Length: 244
Image (cartoon, rainbow, N blue to C red; front, side):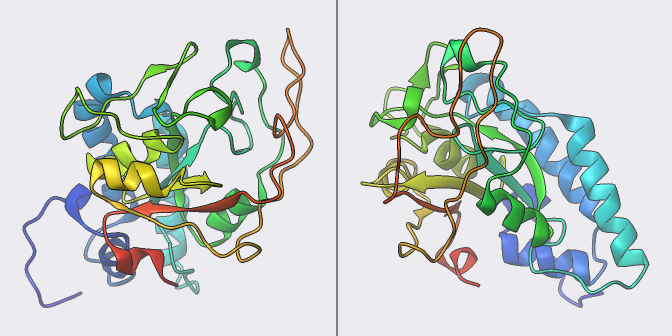
């Protein structure tokens, strides 16, 4: 247990603070997950930053994280920390819709490399963040999932294409949101929403995707076109949470 009293709600803490608190048994991964799920329930109906949140899946992951703490296992750096993933990045069991209605049922059978890395780091995968169709616009909205709003001013854009990620972090729905960036798709939404967005150096974070699944109406490649210069990276509330 730590000696410092902190009355901030769990959803208002950084990823580093959450990871440290779970390790110190100040609170459990389940308590953390429930705090963020409650925050999502309060804020997401208006903002529409996250488009696929499965409460039981998140709580099952958190329960497994708590079991590892209780067993005295070696804990990875993001153990029990909630993270969202973007709808154009494959997450096993979830659609890789790219915001396209024809691909709404294109469920990924495997994780993208960056999502697999987040699992290995102990993250609780909390939900899927919105983007423009094909992730090629400077706003965030599409015919399948609708429009994402900026938490600070609903008349202002949250940016794109990782606007759902940045809006979710800014609103306290998740401390870390995975996104990707070629020409500003993490950095511009971070600017719009007042958070931190990092495009890692090319090759530092693998962008490898599994072969895409098929929906009932259209083929869905893991990427609609080759993106050899796309980097997967985080949106966070502070720069420290972007560092190893």
